[in-house]
Length: 293
Image (cartoon, rainbow, N blue to C red; front, top):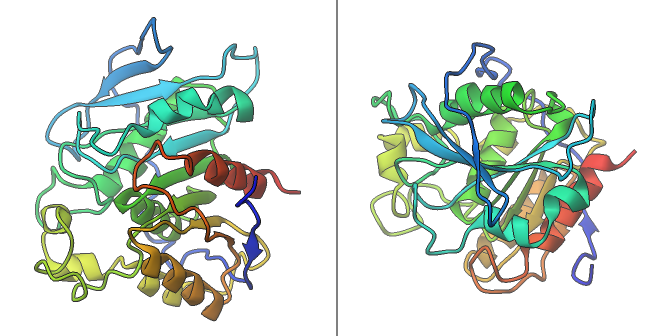
């Protein structure tokens, strides 16, 4: 894959000191039947949740055809913008153009959020709990609705920029739920002080509510707290892009320092959007990790 030359770092991926964090709920989720777009083949439906201020669209691409009796991994393609906004492109539509569902025999899922997503839980507002939405509403709904392989080894996360940050946090905080995450050009090393806009980029305060809530889930902190488990399995793809390059290379050094085994793609220096060519190589590497013997 060209820049697919992977630098394999020294060990240690993370099981949880967070086994106390909530896993996916098993309760039934009431939502409407999905409708298929005749042009794109993308299915969509509105998903209600107590963790958002109203129902939000979930879009899905299924392998075509779905084999009778077969169950599939799920690739959660995490958005970087709030519901209905696509200034940085559309991750699911890019997955459609690349034919990822058929190429990799995977169900592709793109949720959406009322508030710009940073994949955290607000300190006080019960309607802005994005982490809980993913873990307790979205994942159970997808597992109930589609023929999934409902285990961590077959639940994969993908994101860039803030959603790459979110993918890494969800993987670290829920290693009993998600098995792998692929990221590109993400601000991994935010620390509440190094951005110059209050205590983080746009939207962080709206999602977390307090600085303390935000600081509790920083990737470097979660990595430092991780136990010496999963050392022999790479579960994170770290792709470096131009906008947050120092954060990508710094995250790579931090993972090496803590002996976290990962795949490293440092040469994907393209425009900070979904549709500039990085998505295919990053997903290919994710699939290599998730399907390795």
